[in-house]
Amino acid sequence: MKAKNDKAWFQSIDENFQDRYPLNEIIYRCPHSGELLEVRHDLDSLKSKSPAQWQELFAQRQMQAAGPFASGVWSKKEWVCPVVEDRHIVSMGEGRTPLFNAAALAQETGIRRLWVKLCGNSHTGSFKDLGMTVLVSMVRQMIADGKKIKAVACASTGDTSAALAAYCAAAGIPALVLLPKGKISTAQLIQPIANGALTLALDTDFDGCMKVVQELTESKEIYLANSMNSLRVEGQKTVAMEVVQQLDWRVPDWIIVPGGNLGNVSAIGKGLLEMHEVGLIDRLPRLVCAQAQEANPLFESYQRSFEDFAAKPANTTLATAIQIGDPVSVRKAIKVLKRLDGIVEQASEEELANACARADGHGLFTCPQTGVALAAFLKLVEKKEIKSQDEVVVISTAHGLKFTDFKVRYHEQDLPGIASRFANPPVEIPADVSIVRQKIDEHFG
Ligand SMILES: *Cc1c(COP(=O)(O)O)cnc(C)c1O
Image (cartoon, rainbow, N blue to C red; front, side, top):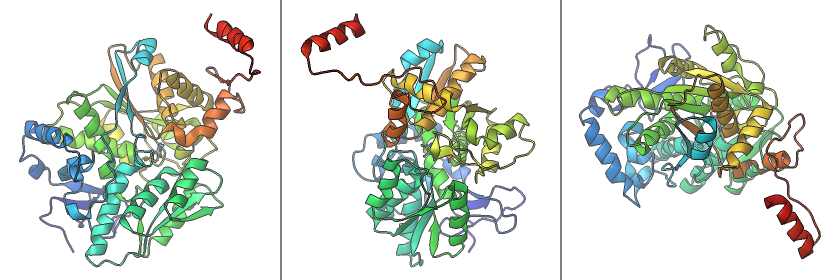
């Protein structure tokens, strides 16, 4: 079936292949080139409203407390997935996350303004909810239309599985998750278990799980929920839309996002480019993808001006959600980074751990992946890429409460090879008021 007159469709990222596929078709790659598909929107239809009209419509919807528009994703429905009927939407109020004004950190680093977009303040604690609401809603509609789907499946470094399991449980759709055994946090492991997903812990790494799930989903009865499925990218691109909306449609100079499988950096870039094309924003920010040094294939490719890309096994990193050596969305990521004058920066284990603790000291509660982005921010300030007059947005991808083991060990100075510059361990003393007083005096002077 060809989608000719639709407002949105799947199309190969390879411009040589212009075939269109409807969004309810079970297809992830271009059958001719094997490249990933992406969702294309009829931009002329989006241009039928003026930028000011869109901005006003989004502002009106922002007021709604119930219904699909109460979601930050579905309030942008025309831009995300116009073909889903409202009655099939599976939403948990995702999006509309705070833009934290990190004024103290900005001042310390001599930068005009630093914002942290708290995508982890969400139902399952990460930005993965933004894409999953779109994907699971589409699945619910496909099932209602009579498509045979036995289960929805993903490989995960912990957060995709949590989101998939929660949205599927809410919709009454069976979920299957493949996790690398022993490589995700306890909080992330218990999420899909609690939500009733079939949880398989495989004796491999994320890349190994990804290979298995790609084979499983060759049978169309098992629907693929990884970001290789470009429906997810559409939900995630609303992060970029929300950021500029929260800045009253002002475009920051920089957006910095941690990258593993590279779906999210691609999504944010796509959102920016589409808003620019339709005229909602009048300029583009520079985009930074921040990788853990232990899992940095994109950083290495960037060092070679993106002339080639080589996957390589990821080493162990504290930033487990981005411990990925063979990123599925690499071509999409390189494409948007080139368009947005992008940079790829990397962070060592010590740099990411100290960046987390430093930000926490100013009231944040960061996950290690956000630590990678914050460390990249600090390094780019140091290198004078980011200038004192710049306005910077760091994308915080998950809630720190998912990563308490890491944070406890940091403050107990128990992370091998890492000097915890901002350690604040608990002080164990007898229950004696004079000793307590003495400690207080020592500490506060
Ligand atoms: C998934 C995830 C990422 C990486 O996103 P990609 O799309 O895989 O690059 C970063 N941080 C957290 C917390 C995640 O869950």
